[in-house]
Figure 1 (cartoon, helix red, strand yellow):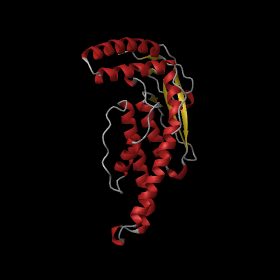
Figure 2: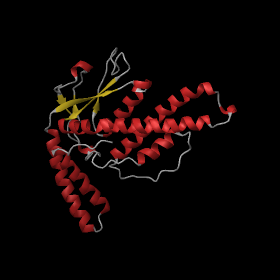
Figure 3: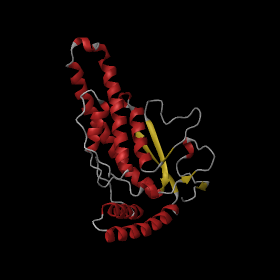
Figure 4: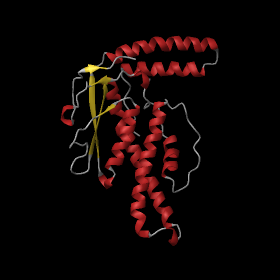
Amino acid sequence: MTTPRPLGRIAKLAARVAAYEELVRRGSTVHEQIAAQERAAALRRRLWEERAAEPFDWGVLHIPGSGGHGKARYDAMLLIADAYGCRKAFYGVGMSPKDPWGNFELRYGGPLSLVEQVAEVLPGFLEEIEAAAKDATRAYGEHIRSLPEEDHDPKWRPSMRRKFRREYMAAYARHLSWRILTGDRDRRAPVAPRPDSAHGQAELAAARSDLRGCLPTAHVYIPRAMEGRRQIHAPDYIRTIPTEEAPIE
């Protein structure tokens, strides 16, 4: 995937929080763990204060609907944006992120620096998932063509490939979002999957994805700015001023 630009000031601060918390978990001595815990707590308070003072903003990602896979791409990117801590857009009756040509617009909101960070990495994730899904679906197509004639009707193959690709993209995004949410701490050794397993193939590929520089930074310490109780429709999203903010927990 593409290399993101350097992190901003708040993102760097959050990265330091995450680093000290990792040292708390993996410190070689009790003294080292205690010192790291104290430093993490101080930085966490500072991060909360700076995040809470940020304006709320919205970002948008244009997603192509080519091949009839626009919805699968949209859902995959929605999982990634949510893992970063962004709020998803609400669409009322008669409204949709889909345009008449099958393309989608993903709108995601959060503190300004977070939205900027997510805007840097989402296109790369979309490109990565798309490329992996194409390769996996091509291999799956070769696999089903090698099966005996009594296994399935050849007329089913186009729909089988489309289904495999949609399931693959969903599973890839789920595994990536889990790695993002956990800070890539809970790595499991992937088991070699069956050639017809979209989930297994996707998990294996997603486990190899290089997330260095793309992981969220102390995701759970991001204050969630609220848009009040009113329903915000698509035309209102860009540069919307929040009516209230959620209390810092």
